[in-house]
Length: 163
Image (cartoon, rainbow, N blue to C red; front, side, top):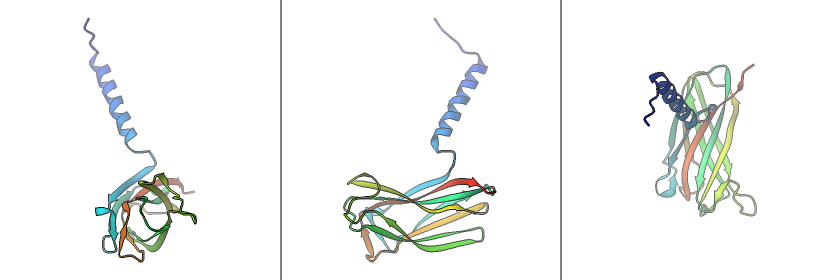
């Protein structure tokens, strides 16, 4: 028995599947999310990582997060970074700390000892004008070469409406 679908039904079904797959790709409020690999899992002072994101909605705040993935062999309980966001008459540069372990040495992130992941809120409810921004991250620890850092990244979400 051969069953054929009318062209309209086939088109509607195809459109629904494509729409579902597109929606499943990234959560609705996520505007940008990217990680960059650290070569040889050793992050040097001179190896800045730059990310680009776009804000198109002036009616909502933005939430900006730093992402970090480290190995269990990482030697410190924190990671100091220089964070700089530039774009559309904005230039925010500051030192940011990510605490990765408590006083007993227990990892604070998610995952196992071979890969621990952190997502640190840096700017919550930040008002950014529509435009394209670059976010540059550099490690700012005592060691010129920092072993055990797998990836560094960012996440930008649409926040609450501006009232």
